[in-house]
Image 1 (tube, helix red, strand yellow):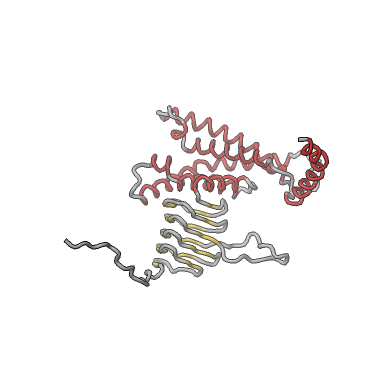
Image 2 (image 1 turned 135 degrees about the vertical axis):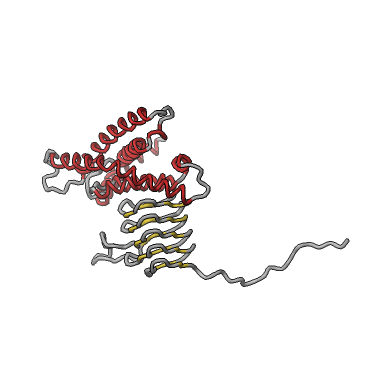
Length: 314
C-alpha cells in the first residue's frame, strides 16, 4: 500500500497533466457536458416519445381527456428540457471571438427559437409516425396490432427516434441528434444517421444490422430487411488526407422500393428507381432503373455429400 501511495504521489500529477493536454487537443471546443449531457438527451428523448405515445407510458391512461392531459404535461416538460440542452450546447459551440466574455444572449435567443420551431413540428412528426406504423402492420403478416408493433418492434423504436432527431438536425442543433440515434442504435442494432431524409410509410423488418448513412435520401413506402447497408464508397479526401465533409456520399432510394436482407448499396451517385426490388446480399454501386428486379445468381451446387445413412438388412 505504501508503494502505491508513493508512486501516486510522485506520478499522478504528471499523468493528469498529460491526460488534460490530450483532451484539450482532441476536444477542440469546450465540453457540452460529456456523459451528463448524454443522459439529459436520453431523458429528453423518452419525454418526447411519452408525449407522442401517451397511452404506452401510463398504465392508467384510459380516457381521451386523460391522454390529452398526459401529452400536454410531457410537451411542457420536453420543451423545458430541450431549451436547457439547446442553451448549453449552443453556448459551448459558440464561435464568436468574444465567447468567453459575452453574456450568451444571442445563444439563448437561438436556443429558444430552435425549441419553439421544434415543438411546432411535433404534430407532423406524429402524423408521419402513424404512416410508419401502418406500413409495419401491412408489411408484416406476423403483426397482430399496432400496439404490438409499438411495444416490441425495433423498427418503430429506431424510426421514431430518427424522426425526432432529424428535425433537430435540420434545425441545426449540434451533437444531440446523433446522441439520440446512436442510443437507438444500441437498443435495436439499427443505425440511422439523423441527417438522412426518409419519407413516410417506412418500415424496417427485423432490423438488426441496418445502416442508413447521413446523405441518404429515401422516398415513400420503402421497406428494408435486416442487414441492409445504404452506405458510401471510398471517401473523397482533402489536401491533408482527411475525408471531405458535407458531400453527397449515400444512395437515393425512390418510392415503393423493397430491399431484402444483406443487400449493400453504395455511393451518392446511385439511385434505385421507383418500384424496384433488390434481392438479398446484392452488391450495388450503379443506379437501378425504375421497376427493376436485381438479385444475385442462384447458388451453384459444387458437390454431393455421400449418403452415410446406415442400412440394415432384415
